[in-house]
Length: 198
Ligand SMILES: [Zn+2]
Image (tube, rainbow, N blue to C red; front, side, top):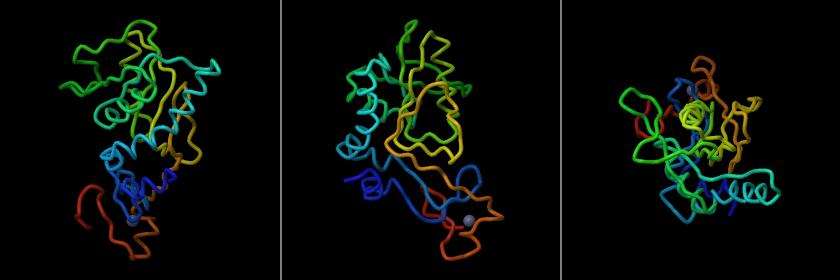
């Protein structure tokens, strides 16, 4: 089964009329937790970027020591990526002041080569935040790995390292005032994760 079919089957990839947290509307929404609830399907999907990373390693183009996923979204993907790549996996999380930090005795040693894991990359903001915290500890970010790369069509890579994803699906977003889905009026506006209609 291909990635899109798997994501649709477990309702991780939804089509409709969605209100995003940014306030914009979109015809598509990804809820990767719906994929990650099925470890066997998640393993299949996540193996796609893993294969790319492994072949780059064989060619001597990349080296990595561990995978780190920012909480919450990055924790489970990081664990599965670590399992398949055969390296440790841990996570960063927010402290009481909202700063991304490393806790629980996890350690980053100087020069440690880190792959950053996410469920979805859109703007790359949380990845950059985690990267900053890990680099401050001496870590070196060598790649980003995610389930869905949702950067807009013409968006440049916001990182100085390569992005590996199971699916590249650029986000299509509309301002509420110019949303064609609102204009057509066929689909009710839905806030993802809730059954509430607007
Ligand atoms: Zn709309």
